[in-house]
Image 1 (cartoon, rainbow, N blue to C red):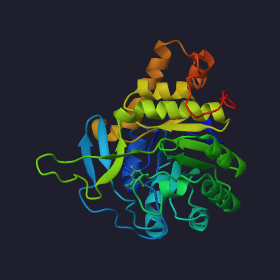
Image 2: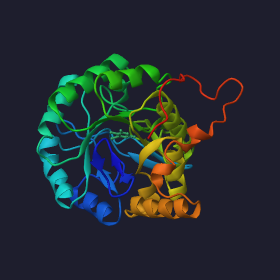
Image 3: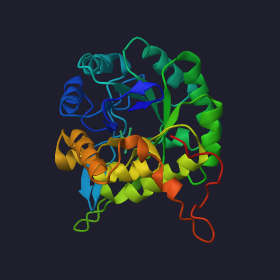
Image 4: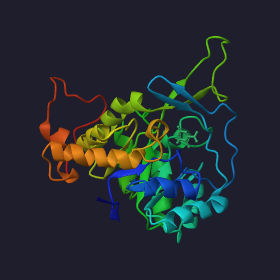
Amino acid sequence: MTVAGVRFRNPVLLASGILDETGASMRRVWELGAGGVVTKSVGLEPRAGHPNPTVVEVGCGLLNAMGLPNPGFEEYRREVEEAVSAGAPVVLSIFGSSPEEFARLAEMAAGLGVVALELNMSCPHASGYGLEVGSDPAMVEEVVRAVRGVSGLPVFVKLSPHLSDLRPFVSAVESAGGDGFVAINTLRGMAIDVETGFPVLGNRVGGYSGPGIKPVGVRFVYELRRLSHLPVVGVGGVLTGRDALEYMMAGASLVQVGTAVYYRGPGAPGMVAEEMGELLDRLGYGGVGEVVGLAHRRGGEGAGGVLSDAGESGGGGV
Ligand code: RRO
């Protein structure tokens, strides 16, 4: 599968934030069949992240408030290099609080051998970063323009499911020269221990991921596909090949697998890719390219249209 000029051996990648803290773990997921890997989001300086507990299992998924823990780019570089040297197409996920910080990281990524940049503008629980940067279309445009100005790598913007009207964000990414979208990041959530009344997570509020968020992700990808010709990478609740295919039919050209690694182990992306291939065969398709965006071609609009905020422009082709 080739997306934005980058060739992946299959369309199922390891998502950012799970088993990607080290080069060795990314290498393992790659060797077990992932089509490529996305790194943990990395910033300029080391960050300890939020206090423990940082992850808890809840109904239909996980709630995390890691808090962007990372050793800083210079320290993390060697982990990325190890994954690259294993032969994996590596997408570097970066976060910053300003266009300048994003651009600096993009400059530092030159020569690393990564195949693309994923801009994290959607972490739901980090003050000054993530969604706080990515909820303003003007800021999104500035960040993408700044990164575009210093890097020739394909630039993907990871969006938050908390954005309601996607149109200004699509325009921002398109006019700044971005190459595609990744959707979705986790949803803001919370768990309380009813025995004690304490919030479970150290940060109290965290990001909900896993099978429970899949319908939100599928709808988001579907809307993006209608609004833009840029490729969309689907992520959120992909546990099986069937889930991956659903995202493809909504319009995703690739999918990412994160929380499924918790349920199925480091081979999860490889398993999902294999299952998707088998399902495509069983359904009589010649390849994944035939199903990307299929749900759009099938139509099925209700009386008032099926979409909430999204307009009817753009979208459709692979
Ligand atoms: O590190 C995190 O807490 C985190 C990040 Br960067 C993100 O993008 N999404 C998420 O749920 N957690």
